[in-house]
Length: 112
Image (cartoon, rainbow, N blue to C red):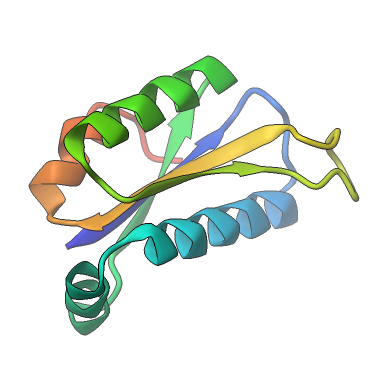
């Protein structure tokens, strides 16, 4: 079981902003998962990987792929209180789910 969080590199988020957006995505997708997946993932150590995306369009393409696979996922839009304009799409989390299923959506992306 794992969760992949995909963050945009094209919007110049600082390290703190990136960390916050990744956390928002991880929690939101966790809440989208079923009880069985949540329990299994937590029991296996909550494995996560953070990956790079180059655009908003890429994030939405990945979200669509996650939807087609029936995977829990969440797209994060920034509130606009600090570095980014309100509504800026910053990250996507896919999973928690079986590693192979998450990799069907995010397996070709580079590590952040």
